Length: 309
Image 1 (spheres, helix red, strand yellow):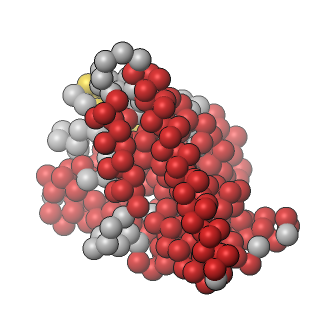
Image 2 (cartoon, one colour):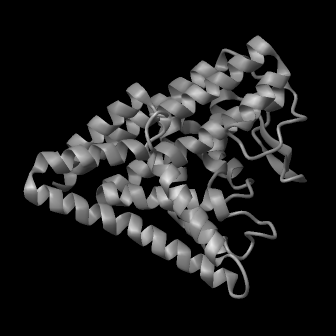
């Protein structure tokens, strides 16, 4: 228990303090390269569904097994060696400070340098076409991304760390990276990435709803829980709608609507009812919600670890 508590607290504080170290090699970049190599080798000919599934199973399994045995081996030599590597690996699995920093950067570019600069900066963090978005749509897309990635980039890795330790967090990040790279419904990935996309749906089922819950708890808005589940079901994704709905209802704004992805218009349903203008200063409130929700999640995990010890 003490081992997991030390890893959790130190890695979380490091992420809050520094965010992603851009000058150093990053775990997720390495995952991406492995996925890219596997996709180029296997995504051709027949049986693409099963080839993509095989790649998914192999990479997810290795991302759990390798750190498990390395950390166990280091623990047998000296606990401090295992703690140091465990902290580094868990730190790489978290992305809250960077997520908030990027969201604020989009709002600042839009506010200080105009709509073209805002569109360009937003394109760094979303998959949709940003070239025709107006100011309201830029702000909306930024907040949607921040709520969804609070789940994917913070709450979900912490959840799987609580259950399965550092290897669990790393396996989850591999699942999430696979989905972000090959989990698309287009000609190239429709079959090859289907199993990866379904696995990501399963892996995020609980964390996405937990994210919505802690956001409501942090903002003293639990009375909106029923409405969050009603609005969250509207989203095409089985999971992304819940943290988006929580943030939309907390801010009393409207998310969703038509957007362009890969040159095609996707008519996303609206989440929330108040189509008011989002103001520049609200990005700082959203940042506080993200920080507060992640800290609350860490506290809940600490309580859980004490209870099972």
